[in-house]
Length: 171
Length: 149
Image 1 (cartoon, chains in turn red, cyan):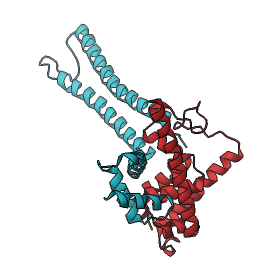
Image 2: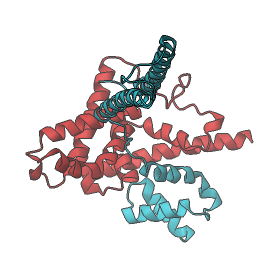
Image 3: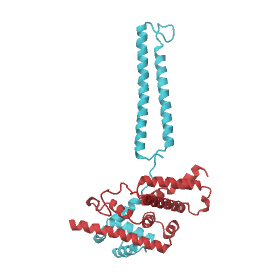
């Protein structure tokens, strides 16, 4: 397989990988780096790719694993993950008035979910994959996925509603 | 979509029990203009998901093609300098009084013409250098934004 053929295979789902990486790593720059790494790994496996019934699922899995490893090693080094989506003086989910109805606020809530729930929200609510596809990527069974998804959605709702009521009280 | 159905789907949604089709129906409802008052609080959530679907991987000019365009720029600049130099030289050779190609009547005139030639040359070199500087700016801002590996 030459480079052109490889790119033709990979380009259709490149953005999907990027979106998953960004969900986990938050920073667009790091997400891009992660995607490059995954592409290199796929290229190194190019002769084995035919044995996989879904190249996309394989790429998704590799991206998820790579990003989770990144997050784990960062925690191990006790590095504070600083990125420009969060204001430095906000700890937890303190909401600024300006954020009240904005999509940035929703993003903050979702990106504070545990990693596994973040992956499932991304794959289900944004990429619209069915439970079988998600099971293949996350190596979880469909019941566990349903439970995690429910938990995630409820947590998001809780934080959304809380702030909405706060907004009403002020006015 | 009927409000009753929306509420049924919404309840299932938070239990993780909706099908993809039912989730699509909720999406369509919440992005429409007819959301019930007590449900309006959920609109940002579905708007967010809709927005997130559109995110694409950013594309950049690669190192390789940038270097290539640099090379072509330098070649073009060099050709321009050489061409303008020769063009100037050919223009001055139709002086009817000169027998020998490239010589002038008086030393003063020769000096003036030499000075003109050198000015023209330095002008052309500056043009080439200017475009190099612009390229350098591009390189600098690129390095500020992107990590160089």
